[in-house]
Image (cartoon, rainbow, N blue to C red; front, side, top):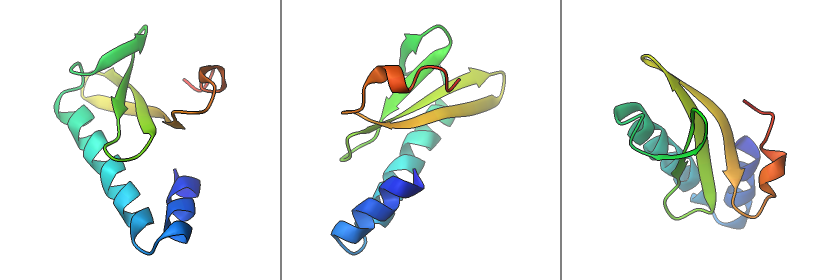
Length: 84
C-alpha cells in the first residue's frame, strides 16, 4: 500500500494522501459491515476502493478483521493467492 501511496504522490501533490483516505474508507466500511462485501473465495471478501483501481481483501473472524492484500486491478489474481 505504501508503494502505491508514494507512486500517486509522485504524480500529483496530495494524490497519495487521497489514496490513503480511500483505503481508510474501504477499511472502515469493511469493519462496519464485514459480511456486506463480495466473497471472492471461502472466507475472503473484497472491497473496491473509490477512485483508485485497487481492492482491499480481508478475512473476518469474530470482531477481528485481517487485511490480506491491497491489490491493483491489473495485477494477475494468481499473485494474490497464498497471501492469506
